[in-house]
Amino acid sequence: MTDEISRRPFVKSLLNARPDGLAVVAGLGSPCWDVAAAGDHKHNMYVWGAMGGAAMIGYGLAQAQKERRILVITGDGEMLMGMGAFSTIAWKPTPNLAILVLDNSRFGETGAQFTHTSGPTDLAAIAEASGIKSVRSVKNTEEAEDLKSFLFNEPGPVVAVAKIKYEKLKFVLPSSSGSFLKDRFRTSLLGTEKATLP
Amino acid sequence: MEVIKWQKETFSALRRQGIDLVCHVPDAGHAKVIEMCEADNEVDCITCTSEEEGIHMLSGAWLGGRRGAMLLQSSGVGNIINALAMPNTCRIPILIIVTMRGEYGEFNPWQVPMGQGTPACLEAMGMRLYRAEEPTQVAPAVENMARLAFDSQQLCAILLSQKLLGAKDFRELAK
Image (cartoon, rainbow over all chains, first blue to last red; front, side):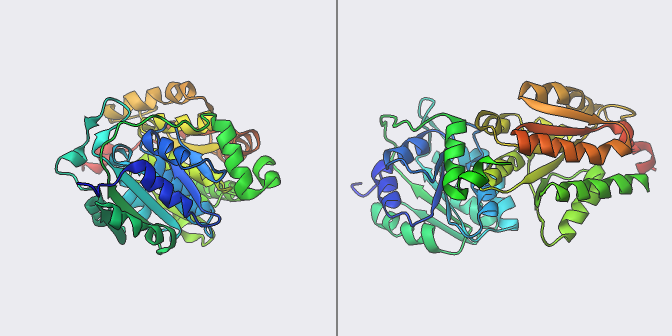
């Protein structure tokens, strides 16, 4: 299969096309390294822990910044842990939220054990059955290219599940300082005064 | 009547503190506040499937400049522990109101472990606690713990004791 999706060039190509103002929440593990490898940006929030939370962190952000497009980039391991988020988001939908799940069917950080999506579980089907109206599943680079307008422009909440190949890649580490990342992110979104004064 | 009064005051205190995003996994002790949030067009009231979703959502909302709070019962505290890693590490303000089970007059033994373990679990994760035993303590606690949370970037929990709430009467419900 020559047209399997490789995560680093895929995320880089996606974020190279990021629209002005887009805020990105990167889920723990490989999605953080992918987003960092695409080039650091002050509108990026790298979440190094709190596994299972990326989609809901993005949802809270979407509730706070209703005029801004929010993109969550996470993996299948984290999304499996937080599947209830699909139901919560679908019930009170935010049109500015996009969630991209990079699905390699592995727990990549812990020894590449297989996840449930290597078996019978289909995250896109779960998102749909939870009530998310716009869901796409892509499996090759050509389909992946079409995701840009879906993730950046389609009325949300939208969920895309990209089946990617398993690769053992070098970590590309962004800052791990929560207070730095939070203050940088808030300052870039809200301005210094609103971000730092109570 | 008294239960309804402090719940109304809780809602007003939340609104005075600029909180317009409220999430919950419901409990009878929060019913009136949830109802008032649902009825207020300026409040987004979100039902979570599990309590950790609420902590994640509040963390994201604060990143975007919005003040929120979560309503939950003590059994749900067990679900939020690892989610608190983010607000703890990032110094993101968190405000939660916990209705206590498993204490004063509890009928259901299954509520006891998490109810009794709630203060130690929350403190272990760096939360600041205030326990309300009397109806008149509730609204001032909400107001001042909200200040501590949002003005001083703290993780704050108000525990509403079962003495204040009244224990659920299972025997009566089984008749």
